[in-house]
Length: 187
Image 1 (cartoon, helix red, strand yellow):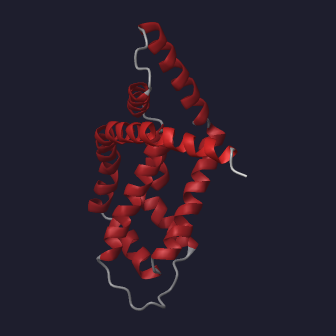
Image 2 (image 1 turned 180 degrees about the vertical axis):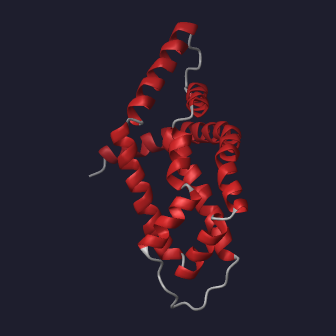
Image 3 (image 1 turned 90 degrees about the vertical axis):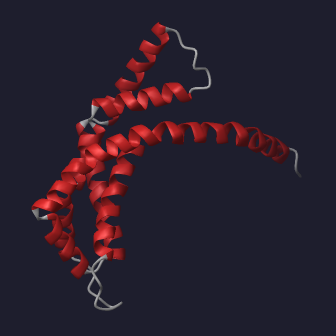
């Protein structure tokens, strides 16, 4: 679930970048592919890695995840001791997932994926324009407000997504199990 939050925050950062880029016309379809250096600067000014790390280390987000997981469990009738143990288990493994080695590895993957994707969608001119915008006070204000906005958004959307997913799983799983069972009897 932590990765859902990270992915959503990363997607939001990319969305804002894409919206900004759409407002700037490209010179031609043959426009220059952005350099790694300029993309690293864009990652820096948009605080992609910091935003992802801040969100993943946010105890309120972890609490939201735990509550959403608990609410989505098929047997939601855990007693107080079981709920406490559930919270301890989720917290233990959340911390393990976010240890320093895992964070550094994840940060490198975030950067690599961003650079690869940006090269496919942005020209050098568009990247330069984003760097210029996000380097301004207004651009930095937007970047600084995104984590709080995403946290609020995720608090609203996570229960909806989990409920929808659980309902769909309950509907689909028996059908899938029946087809898999039938597959065992095919020649």
